[in-house]
Image (cartoon, rainbow, N blue to C red):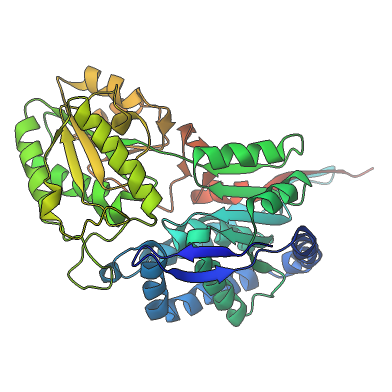
Length: 459
């Protein structure tokens, strides 16, 4: 098998290399997971929860090497300290609601009938995780899957090969059996073959639209449940009654954090004409204050993109938009670290429209376009003019207004006065080409379990 190489964006060198499993080896891993699942599910719920939380605690103990490895693997500055806040919050919440969510629902318990519903684990859960938030996105499914009594096979993105190894190391050290949670390295062909062979009770994939389509094709005819979180082009709308300063700070952070490589990052902004000039001025100033550089430098606030080919996509989108009449507000020369490769200067564009790729196709980089709008009607039309629907951010001073506008946006989550955030108590889901299914909240347990009914009669 051809080795899979992890090319670090820090200096372009090979940071890690792993040989993927053969199909036979991968099938053996699935067989071990299937054999271990019944015994794992028989353990008391409280025991499974305790082991999962212990695994996360072990991961927290690895914070220093994990933060350093993330910087080497995908370029996030070490000053931001990893993903532990979200990992811990999501683990704690899903653990807290597990007993209530997974408990049988009694419909009748009488001398004549006992009728009730239970939720059973689906068996072996397959997680295909992305590189941009490699721990958080895995935890979203890993924690509820294990708590619910499933075994898990994790395949991480080639850009973050070491993440799965760290997770397996932590969970195994905490007492989760080796066959209950397995980290594997697979190529695309073997991944698709396993899915086509109906190896899994549930497949969760986070990645590109093209990747999601490949997963769907592989699963065709197997009736395997899929959870797909795919592309995004999330909008922000600054209304006439918005707090402009707060909107600038949050929306620009949502556009630029993690070098713009966020599933729910802000990629397009619509500003009421009343605030447009002030917002544009503030947005440019906010971005010009960023410091592009080596992620190990404490002064760096913007690291390289995870791969130079990702940066090439953004450069091409920006160049095409400028050629079509867009105005760049940021002088790339101010960012000396821009090397034409993975290190990419951020950009804010005005005089953009929806004929430009930068406003319609996912950028997944440190660029955002800003358009002036006359009011709610125009903003709603533009926000909905997208093949994606993950989140939308509305800036207003009124709950009812935000709710009414959100009801008219084809999106998975509506935010008011915040952006680029996951609340573990709320379902993380999307519409259109963003995918299907949902994680987190009590519904996250529904994805990794199936309903089973008992209708018992006395004669």
